[in-house]
Every structure is written in structure tokens, then in C-alpha cells.
Image (cartoon, rainbow, N blue to C red):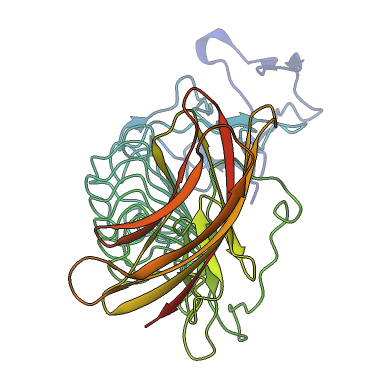
Length: 440
């Protein structure tokens, strides 16, 4: 409320005052009655006149602050009636078009100091910088985003968490990456782990070098190491294991697999056959010479050799080959350069077996100027010791040689043998078709 005080100004011994001058506006003279009115602004200054005492009392209205206390408890006092308000890191101030308003703004870019504890370099969502921490980089070369992510006590390096509760129990673990709520939330000393998806590797404590993709992936692991799991919770005691998908037809389960880049694609020179068991585990094997993978209605397929139960088929196994001979028997060949008896074929007789050997032979000198043809039938048996010839072999042959080529048979150890004899100082090529009939 304004108050108008009026008074005739006297100059005392010096006479009357004719004019007054304010801070601005020039000199003010008296009115027609000889008075100069001194009036407050009605808002901040009040002037009260007292005719009885011939006085004017000038006073401020409302409350005037004499000092200001900052957040750091330091006190600022006006100087010359003015108090300066300046921005600091991340804050700026301005008076946009108004002399009675100060506007405080957040800078377009925010500079946070390195996090050293809960009170420095932390952005929180809530009222407690420790429990409600949201963004900070406590640790060496580390960063955390998410309510409760990371902590202010770990001594690890190169850890990164994004999502509520990620890496919140970390102590000395290093190079862990967690993305998704509660991912790697219990890991303490584990290092080199990467979890992507809500609660992936959520129970891991001290395991190392695990990679998990997908919600709850690897959530079974506590101390396991060196595993890769995709959309699979993992199995206790896994080590150096890859698990992709979860068998089934329900939520988060799969019952079909399609992988590009395999069909009609050439593979390397060294390769094996891939098989899978009823737990989804893959493995490979190659078998031995002459083996093939043979199926079974009641059990699993297995590598095995082809056999002839009645020995009417001669089977010769080799590297990536199986030679089958029926009817005329197997073909055997040999070359001689002298008159020494030479084995062209040998057959092992098993214990308590008897065998008949039938052979048809043809031979010719290297220039085909001489030749031989013939047949032989002979038998042998074995009871417990070595092989024994049965009776006299039947040998029949003819030739037109000037030498003495020929045929013979014998036994050696457990084997029955067919031998050919060439001509001295002469090259002969021999071929025989031989069949073995065995009685077991």
C-alpha cells in the first residue's frame, strides 16, 4: 500500500528548499502550495509522514533476502544490491526479454565426471544414488545403464551392462558384457562372459567365457565355462559345449532345423559321416576299410563289413572299396621272371573249417609267343593246428612253352595256397579266377 507524505521543506538557517533531485528524471520543484510530495512505489518502498514530528519514514515493504545459501552450504551475499546467478557444468542461465526473470537451462550436452562412488558421476532414477543408480561408469573402462546395474565396489575392468540389475554382484570379474534385465546379475568373479536377452546367464557366478543369446539362455549355469548357448538354458556341468535351440513344439522350443550353405556344397578331402543321437548331440565317424553304415530297426545304425554267410561271395575290403566276386570267383594276378614257385593266391582257413578251392588259370609269356591254360581243384581243412591238404590236388593244364611252366598248391600255417612256376630268364604274366567254398 502506498502512502503519500506531504511537507513543506524548510532550509533552516539556509532558507527554504526550492527543488529536489532523484537518481533519474531531473529536478522536481514544489507545487502551487509550496509542497514537494515524496511517494513510495506502492510495491517495494513505503513512505510514511508524521506531521507531529515533522518526519518522513522511508521503509522497504515485504521481505528482503540479505544472503543466499547454496547446495554446498556456502553463503552468497548481494554486492551493491545485486546477486549474480551463473550456470556451472551442464547448467546455463539467461534473462530472455525480461528484467525480472532468470531462466535456468540444462545444457544440450551433459558432462559427467568419472564415477568414483555413489555421490560422483551418477545419474539415478529415484531418491537414493546407491540403490536407484541408473547411469554410471564405476570401474576401469566400464559402463552401466539400467536401474541397479553394476555397483560401486567392483575392481574389474572392461565390464559393460545395459538393463536393470545387470552385473550388480560383480567383484573381480573382467570383460563381461550383459544386455537385458537381470542378465549376468549374480556373476562375481566370472570373466569373459557375454549375455544377450532377459535373464540370460542370470545364475552364473564364477564361470568364464560363456556366450548366451535369448531369454533365459544359459540360466542353468553357475560355474560352467566355455559354452555357447542359443535359445537353450544349458545343462549343468556343460563344458566346451554348443547348444542351439530347445527340442519340442511349445513356446521357445523347436522341432525343425534349416541351415543354408550345406546342401550341394563340396567338402574338404578329409571328412567324416555326421550322426545325431536322441539328445540332439552331433558326432562324426569314418569307419574302417570296407565298412559301410548299416541300419537296424530296433537299434542304432553301425559301421560293419559285408559278409557272405555261405562263402559263395568273395569279399575283399580296401580303402574306400569293397570288391565282391561271385560265380567265377575272385581274380588274382602275378608276374614271374624265373622258375621259382610263386604264390598267386592265399586263403586263411579258420579253426574247425574245411575249404574247397577251384581255380581257372591262364598265363602267357610277355611277347605272347608261349602260353599256358589249366584248372585245379583241391581241398584243405583245419581242426585246431595248422591247415592240412586233403588228398591229392587235381591239377590239369596245357602249354606250348619250350620251358616248363606249371601249377601247384600247398598249405603254409593256417593258409591254403595256389602257386605258379614260370620259366627261367623269361617274363610270364599269370591270371587266375579262384573261388572258395567253406564248410563251417
